[in-house]
Structure formats: C-alpha cells, structure tokens
Length: 388
Image (cartoon, rainbow, N blue to C red; front, side, top):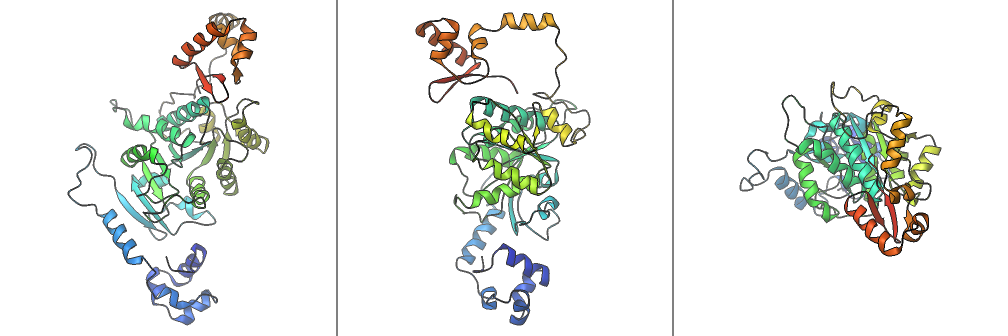
C-alpha cells in the first residue's frame, strides 16, 4: 500500500533487504541503493487507510466465534494471507514474471500445489460451449486433476460447477474425492464478482479454494482482470480454452501460459461460430486440438494424477464402429437433428431442408429444446447439442 512502491519495486526491496521488517527499518541510504528514485519516507510512514485494511484483514482471518459453519459436518474453510516467504506459496507462481506479493486464500491450501489444468473461455458461450466446459472439468476432476478458472460468467462458472460435481457427490466406498477446483478472483475475496456467482464462490470455498492477490474489499476494476489471468495460467500445468472470440480475454490467459512454457489446448468448434474463432486461431498457432478429456490428460502427462481413477465424461476413446452400427445410428437420428447438422441454423433453413411447415417445425424444435437436444441461440438460430 505504500505510495509509489509497485510490485516490482517491492520485490527488489525484499530481494535486497530480506523481509518487510528489514525494509521498514532500513536507512535512507540502503533504500536509495536499491531504488535511487524512491523517497525513503514513503516506506516509514503508514499509508492512508492502512490501519483500516489491517483491521479488516485481521477480522477476516479470525472470524467471530458467533459465526457457526454452514453445516456441522462441513467445517469453516481455512483462511490465510500467504506471502512470498511462506512455504505454502506456490512454486509455479514464482516462475511468473510478476508473482503477487500476497495471496488471500480461503479453502484447501494444498490445492496451490496440486496437479491442475486451467479451463477458460467466453463469458457468453453457446449452450454447447458451456456444456463442454462442464463436462471436461467434471472428467478432469474425476481423474484427480484440479480445475483452475476465474469465476467469471459463462465458461469459467461452468468449469467450476463441473469440477464440484466430484467433490459434492456422496463418497462411495473406496472412491476418492475429485480433483476439486481453484477460483482466482479479479476482486477482493469480500467482493465477489459477478454477484450471481456468490453462492458458487461459497461452495468453492468449502470444497476447493478461492484465491486473490487484491485487498479484501477491492471492487471489480477492468485493469485487475488481466492480472488475475496470469495467476490462472501460472498455477496450471496447461490451459484449455473451451470457446473464445478472437478478442477474448481467454486468449490473454493462453498467451501468458505459452510465455511460461505451459501447454495451451483448445476445443475446436463450428467454422461459422464467432465463439470458435479464438480457439481456431490458437490451434493455427500450435495449440493442441483436443476432443476429449483423455486428450488433455495425455498431452499434459497427467494420466497418473490418481492411479485407477475414472474419467467419466468425454475421456475414453470410442471403439471403432462397424458399418451396421453406423447405419443403425443414422436411422435412429431425428430427421430435424440430421438436417440441422452441428452448425447454428435458422428455422427457415431447416424448413427448406426438411419440407416441414413453420407450425409443425416450431413445435418440434421446442420439444427438442425441452429434451436438451437443441439450444436456441440469439438471432433466432438453433444448434444441435452434443456431449463432450
């Protein structure tokens, strides 16, 4: 909080002098030897609002005894402020060009060092994109891999939800819990954004981990979200982009992951979908094209994340179908689904392809939508839904 002392200057001081206490007690000459342009007085005077922030942080770390846990079976999540000198501080973050000075964390701190994959994508995904994010994250979590994302709307939220399926289901005899999930926030932990994800954040705190480098009451500021992305990329063995437009913030995360030497993976989509163009651009640049969760595990060498683990969704490669199987499948496909293919299509185009009138076709599309086989997109378009 010291004015004029950014993260880079702070790390230089800590590297040269050893600790915050040593920096605060250092002579002006010692300070100037490290940062010639810095006024040493800025390190000896308490910054404006410092006392209030200290009190807020202390109260957050030590919640009142009058606040019982949500359930007697589920203890209150662990809260911690983790410094660069803390042994809990993730070593993967130290490899980043700009490791945060502090991490506010709530939940299972061991996840900071767990084998993990970042799952990111559009805030406004197609129904298929959201389903893919949920399915891939659930499969990765079932395999014992921690899913890291940014708690944003859309793909991030779907990924967290998918990973939580493994953690929140009743544990079967001999079945280990899933890989859990880590949410990296672009706000303070007392200012969840978006608000619609508040309950999701509470579940993540109970079954996974919330992390932020920002002071507890930091509101959503546009400049902070790219900073958040570098932590998402650095914590993870690789970054999976599910759906992204060409100008998506998810591509920033992918670029940061690549700069750190981490793998970048992308799920392809329709050539007609704007939400697939970012993934296609990444694939052209060398990102790994993935179709199943097993592709992700193999590419990142995470097959041994949990011996004997099951990967339930989107993981196993299908056996080679016979010609008779393909013929039977084709005969069983609904004629509207067959005419629709897998690209977004208008009702008028479907009417021309099937020969069905608007009334009959509209009723059948509504039925397929209620069955979860078709999604209605903006612009009066429809798209067939597949399973990841």
